[in-house]
Image 1 (cartoon, rainbow, N blue to C red):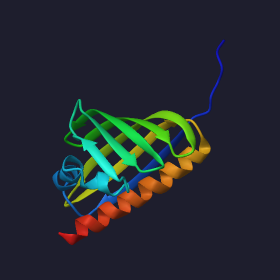
Image 2 (cartoon, one colour):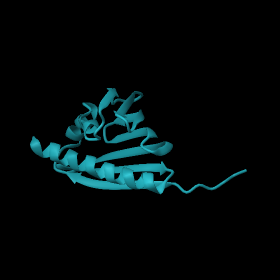
Image 3 (cartoon, rainbow, N blue to C red):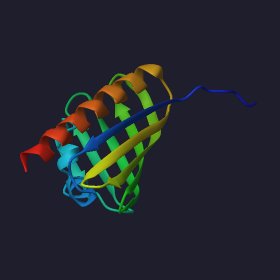
Length: 138
């Protein structure tokens, strides 16, 4: 039997006054992961690796880094807990040079529940705002 399931996608674009290399560096050194509010971050952010974000008493996110090359990042995102059913989804991040600026496009797709999509939209928006603040410190 084949059944149809509606899936949700979160898409956010933000332009930063920073180089693509600088933004990539904040992914590589896991600075951006600290903006998630996770209590514990384990693993590496590189192609073929896995990292875990633990949120004490709330849940965890296990992420497989499919690729992390120049201006493209692809992640398989597995969420457990947070008072929601376990969920597997995909995150694509594109970093496009725009002169001395960089356009970041984030697409988080295959989200099963509307509630989960709304939470991810809020979380990613906050993370990208924190990234902007971090870049302005330098």
